[in-house]
Length: 392
Ligand code: DNO
Image (cartoon, rainbow, N blue to C red):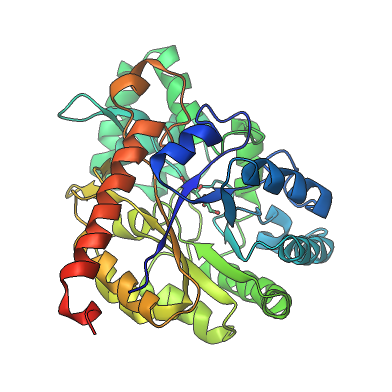
């Protein structure tokens, strides 16, 4: 019986959760990135080894790179995109030379994951990340003031957004803007002005064009990844539907299948993020996992609860709309036919207990994720020990 590898995302030495803390969670693998290197620039072997040794000193292993960010010029296929692709290839080679085998990345235009609240109160008092259409419209129409913003929302959202905007104080509006543009801890913050400028670059790029740009990028980097033994894992759109007028191309099973078939190279794979895919009601996660099969190179396990308006909050790992038992079982079935273990990490967690009073990275506080990891680990063992499929 082969298990999935248990990993933990760590943001480097500025992360309030130390490597010593991570050891106590039971995770053996670390998922991290060189966040201080500007987007698009080469990751040198020196820098990679420095981080790798820091992790190794605690008896842990750097299992997954998450992420080497794809420069906007590559996504829009403009400016110096060719030079940036060459730099990306160099980073892939360097990561491989340092003995790390999986690289996660995403192809979301402009913003990485997007939420409208980082402190949504749960029934038990813990805090969760939340996405709400009315707040997104408030941000888009009244803060960002994107030209075509009003055309992106239905009438009911527009009316409610207007009322809500009038009720918000200046501080509340600023907090909303900072939340939507939160980005990745330790990386450069975006401003409304720079966001508007970046969004404009997509005025002439629809989903088909963006998909083309991604396929071009993948056709360039996949052979390098294959040659150097690297598995690429594209992270789905989060949330998995168009926002801020941007095209989305990694939101559904057919999106994924298109990419995997078009660039049919075993190095070209997926980061199966259940929280991201799970926020789209048309996605059936166990079916998706089965269909993607051994092209799943990494998994983010987390849950969401959606309402009828399309808003969602991040639920406890085993609660919510995703059938985590069925997903875990599919992943374990895939794992049995593989030599190397598929890493998973408990993705996000509630801010709870002692973490409530601390400064934490939203979604990445220790105790909520520790709870998630413990639950998922138990689920894994339960399935492996009791299901006849694994008892051959
Ligand atoms: C959010 C994360 C994402 C993810 C990137 C991968 O918490 O899952 O930011 O790391 O999209 O490139």
